[in-house]
Length: 51
Image 1 (spheres, rainbow, N blue to C red):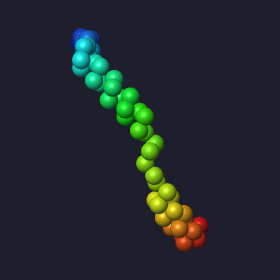
Image 2 (spheres, helix red, strand yellow):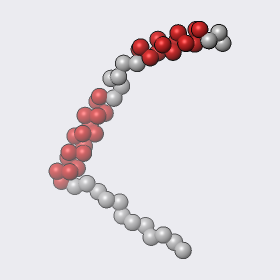
Image 3 (tube, rainbow, N blue to C red):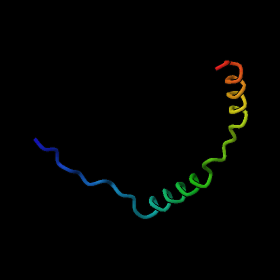
Image 4 (cartoon, helix red, strand yellow):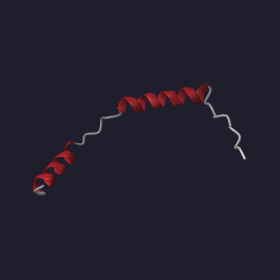
């Protein structure tokens, strides 16, 4: 038996504007986390592992 296809809910008005604003802010912030300490620790572990 086939499952009926339902419409996807869409944002409109103020909700849509707020969603777009938050999505753009989040996109601009991506990649701002500094992982240099973690990378240095990983390099030390690999150097000591004698692979």
